[in-house]
Image: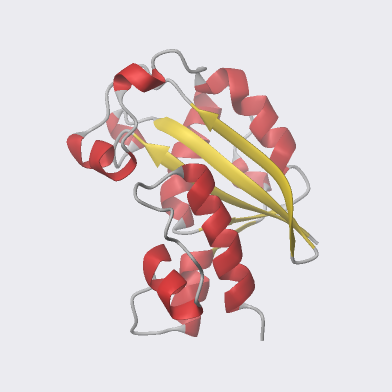
Length: 169
């Protein structure tokens, strides 16, 4: 089985309000082994990040100003996830941004891709407990000490390890 663990960072909370992607990170897992194959891009959103979002990811407008626009990396993203089951923590949030940006680029959205929400999995396995990524790392003994800011590639990698630990029984 080929799995892709994916995360995004954004300028804010809602693509309907004009917020955009600023980073996409994805990690490949085949037969429960992290392969080392990744997809990672910073993206120029052509706008600033909300103060709250900037506090989460730390990606400034200046840093992102020379990065590619989403449409220039979109087909590579779709090729990377093609044929895989994609795992995303709190999938509706990330999918709203991915689908909005893909639609704006005139490309197919994630509608035809199998997506699993690991937050839903965690809530079923650990009802009535905190199930954000940090809480799951603590509960499952997954090292997240490198995580001072949220970063899409780092979070996708941590998510892969969390999922493998959560489903190891």
